[in-house]
Length: 142
Image (tube, rainbow, N blue to C red; front, side, top):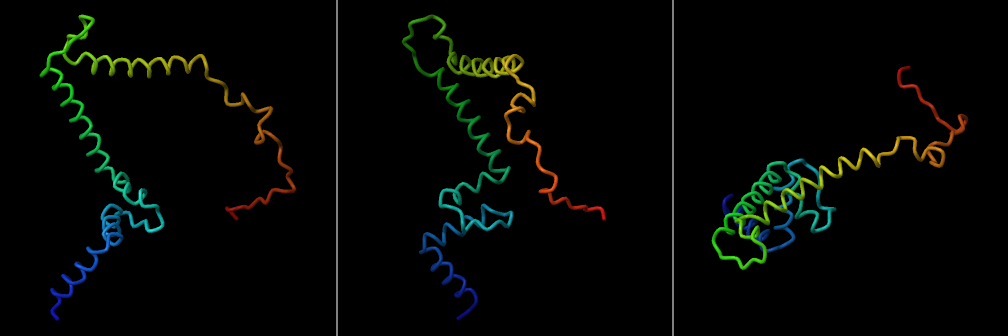
């Protein structure tokens, strides 16, 4: 049997097994060399998000989807109750600005609600002194 026939036979046997096909996809998605065979099935399928290029593809795809939905708002007639709803893209712009306003308000609230780093210190377990004789101190500079 020639080398080419052996490769095509091994590819057919692997492609008939769904788990082996999933494992092949895992190897392609996981270029970091990490063993994903112990991950659950959903975790193996989501490994493509680990690659920054794939995250960029998802963000670009969402941007294109949002732009398409914004442009689709110009293509149909709306039956509105308030005159401002007649503006094309009103709800998209309203949602964007309200989300940005939430972020700004959260930053402003942080000024008033922020506590010091030692706020819980009197009652915190880590604030307790640890007995020196129980500490195993090692010197790495010796």
